[in-house]
Image (cartoon, rainbow, N blue to C red; front, side, top):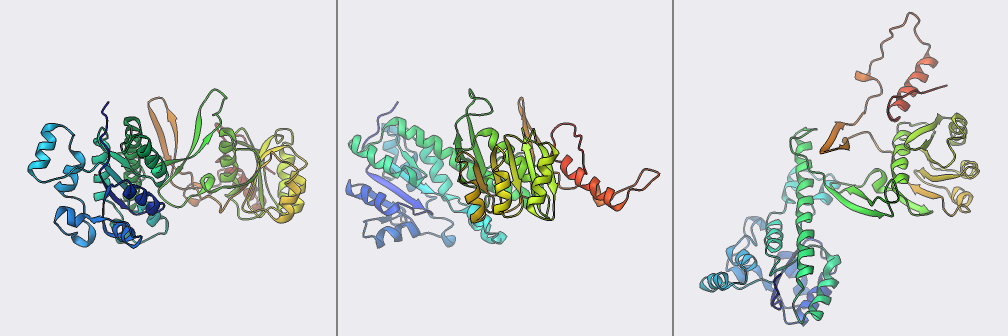
Length: 424
């Protein structure tokens, strides 16, 4: 463990400027010299906070339209030097000062991807200098504090007060771990984007760009820890985009079952209702109205429906909601809830209502864990292989029988293990 000297110089280069000004002011108030780049330096100067441009520190201008700013020995030497006589002597010989605090967040690649920017614009959002700064500072965490999230600004300022201008070793190690996870996720998003652009559904090396969205009370069983992670490589979809309107906190099993229900009900354009129990549909139906669809789904197996998850693919109306209120359910999912529907379900304080922004399409990769690895497959996006039905019986089915079979095939996609589907 290495004790850190008081922080004397900080390098700030952030795309997301949330909380930047009060944080930088707090550093400046402690007499810490601030060094910054481009837009970050401009924001600090506009706020009246003393700041030194990186170009002034390196005696070399930004070039290539800003692609090269901090990639310089004066910057990385100041960050990477161990505070030993040998390294400090090398810095002195080359007139390089140490940098004790690095505050960086990266170009918004995922956000740019989410708004469907063209490929060249997306390429320019691949951060090079920022990633290099983060990795250098994190590698040298024994002496340097690396901060990659504005949510940590207050912790840094508090530590400086408590540590008489220095940060504790434990905090630097914690921030370093967070920094490496930050760059790993950033690169995972880029890698997945390039693989998709090349049409490589199952690349040789696969990184999953996941970010913890919610810590759950426990997993499938009370003795298991659990969390919900969402993909961070684009706009949120499916369960990651759900908005809870009322009810208790969602559990691991709730999320698993709710996802199964929403994926199935999303298969249909006409009014549809699905009831899921233990990740399997125990009732699913179409109808001329949402109420008719729900009542038919409930008739499939009203016993198993008790304590189930209910999903509908149309805005939930008051009449259907009132009928749902007669049954004990854990979760209700819908694209939206009318005022009457909210009123009908308001008395069930524990019932979780999830507003889903859009039906989720069968796309991407589906996987499951096995001991030592993962099984992956492309999404099951076809009801009929190659879009063609072949009749292999002497009597051809009627049109209504054919419709029933296609409905059954759709349900079977969402039933676990070997499926037996009764359809009428």
